[in-house]
Image: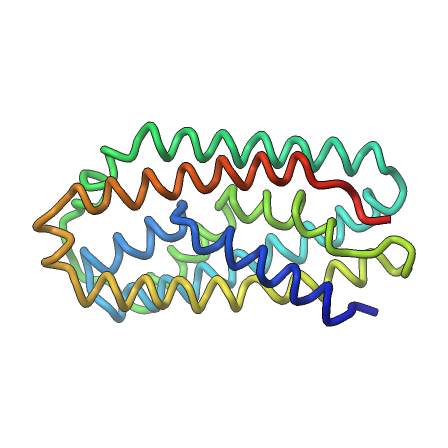
Length: 212
């Protein structure tokens, strides 16, 4: 029902979007810098679970929508593209606030609490809604039928990719806590580049047509 080409195409696109620093990355890096590796990894697991909830919910709702209406699909796509670009603009404008946002006093954090906090961030992450509501439908083939089924299968791809990326950020940040602390400009550079990348992805999404 879902071809290898569809799965690979969505996996690559999801990886690009996920790899761009956003709310989840900021949260994971913040946990790593403030509380260390164990808390950051637990937070990453919770975040992936929250994103999976968003993925399945979006697939069930959007599948019916895009199958019935090309106009509705276009509206969802353009709205997602505009919001992704807006997120990029905000990230670039507020890149100087990253060091302050990560400067959080450390304290005890149990794994269960860290997972729960990560879950909340994943469910509320606007990038997840853009990815699964506006980007995901472009990789399903309406001519093949079973649109919702295709979206559900494809929606299982992104959360594991996100978990791997978040764990990589957690390990990297926890391993170079002192390096980040010595140069706030490094955090500003990450935020600025991430913002520009999100703007570019928003423009690309807006110019991409529907698969028919």
